[in-house]
Image (cartoon, rainbow, N blue to C red; front, side, top):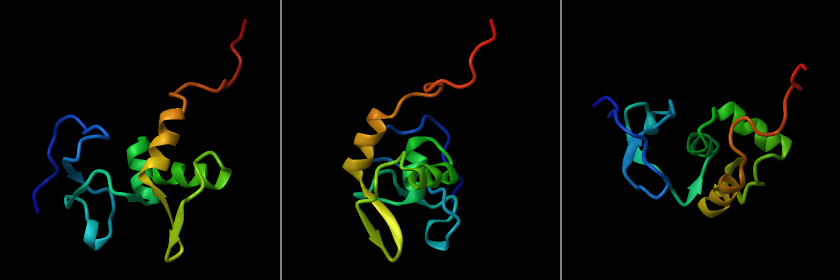
Length: 103
């Protein structure tokens, strides 16, 4: 297997290939998979959103992420258009308040 290629991360419209984040045999690290599929899993949504899979699953359980469009073998999946619409509306880092500043 070849090591992952260094360089800029592809954009959402770019269908170039990049290493998979999964540790399963059919998507092991170093394997090359399409960046965007029609139906996205938890791990794919997390990768595209730039967050950890645990964070994405927390967003789903708290209702921050969109409701899954379908379930396959007990695993939620989101249509690419649903996810991209949610991602476009998502506020950037540092939004939403936090601890008030001391005066």
